[in-house]
Length: 262
Image 1 (spheres, helix red, strand yellow):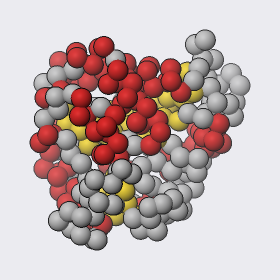
Image 2 (cartoon, one colour; image 1 turned 180 degrees about the vertical axis):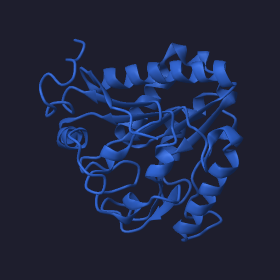
Image 3 (tube, rainbow, N blue to C red; image 1 turned 180 degrees about the horizontal axis):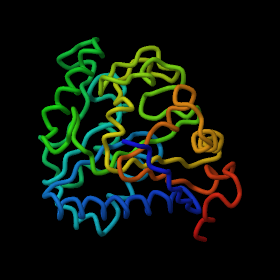
């Protein structure tokens, strides 16, 4: 499966970006439910992931989604106790999930450090990989479902999920989920999807807002190598979409991408 050429959409500010991305996601979910009966989405944490979920919660069109017919997965998680406010799952519940009628059996949170695997993040990662494999059907041609949309925040160092530059997890070519140890950003122990799992998605959306992301965006879209810049290696089967605000797009070559809608 070849790389899809990234498409770049620039919004005036992070609030507009969150609202537009939420509207785009609602449309994508409704279309997937119409076509296949259900939708599959991989959520991301962080400032922009949570901003998008909050915008989705506030969008009148959110009721067009059949929330009982959607599978929600996570791209990564901090390996801390289940009720830790730093967990992406905890933040997603506060931003959106507690206010929509999702089916709890279809909300696939990554295991927590006070769960069945205790301190063993690698065992927890293997269990999540098994859950993904169980959800994959024959039409998915692999060990994970063909996600309709997989969202990723882009870090200032070009990390995505918990795949950090020069880190072993960024080089993984076989496993779909790994334990991450000694992450350069706290907490050091995490669980993350790998690039093979990310590339199984129909669409991969990379979200970046703020001037602290401008360098990372320019490096990743400038064709950097994957071990140095994991975000450069994240792409979807049918579409790779970079959703930016004006400040995150500031270092991209002039004329390469359309100017933001005012």
